[in-house]
Image (cartoon, rainbow, N blue to C red; front, side):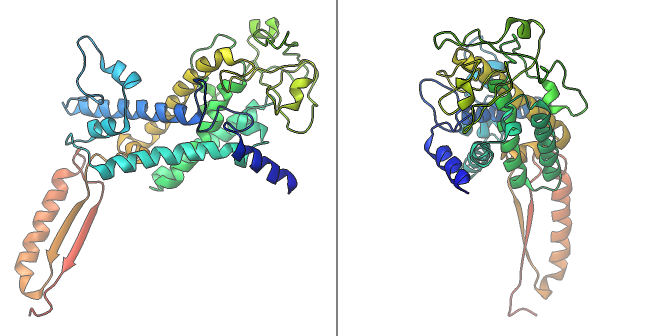
Length: 368
């Protein structure tokens, strides 16, 4: 019980938790889980909305007018805002305040769920890919993705968003805690979201992976032969003990007691001041692309319409039918039903199809 209270206090008091990209707030130009998640969601949403707009012969300009010679790809990378993207995604080129707030609150739910992993699973190696737990981390990701897809299928979008946030945390931590980018990789490790593929080139449990940092400089503390052979490793982390397998890398940082034991130092890239902080922005960029790859996988299973609903984008409004059901209106009710069904049929399968329908019957108490 005391350990749980200690972990909670640490998670709440530290700006970035104990062993991950900073969850919500950071300083010194570092990138947070919040930044990574939001960038990926906005970029992938823009891709989906642009594809739909092109298919329908509509313009798609999420950041306003294009400068001469500027491509839409640059807009998607550099100039996105929640309001402008919501407006550009709307089929009628309009965006209400309610729609924008819904889109923004959806993103907030996802990155808050992401951040809570640091508090709820602070000592779980698998949730952070610590201590070479690659099989366990991948299992969490693939199970989580299955949960997201199943929830979307049931139209349980809130549950899907919360699960997606948790999955994104673990996926993003892989790029900060492993030596993936140190090996020169600048693309996501797609095997992490593919349960049908095998994890390969994992450093064995008795394979040394690091050497001591020299004078606090950990730039080249990963053994050259590990990098040359393309062996995948990640740092060990422990709040309470310095024990770790002989010759293994540590996570590093003030709270990691294993980093004081040979080989001393660490390899995490959680912020610019970390042991491998010189690669922080590289790791964050790959994490953004990996998160987009995960979102694309979910999009493929859900379809564009439900993917956008998951993300909080509604391209059309709710359609409400108000019909007088007074007995004297029987002939008019028949015609109203015919017209209503005609409207529904004309919108089905189109970009203007309402997200839901509401029927409001009323009657005249004094009628026959």
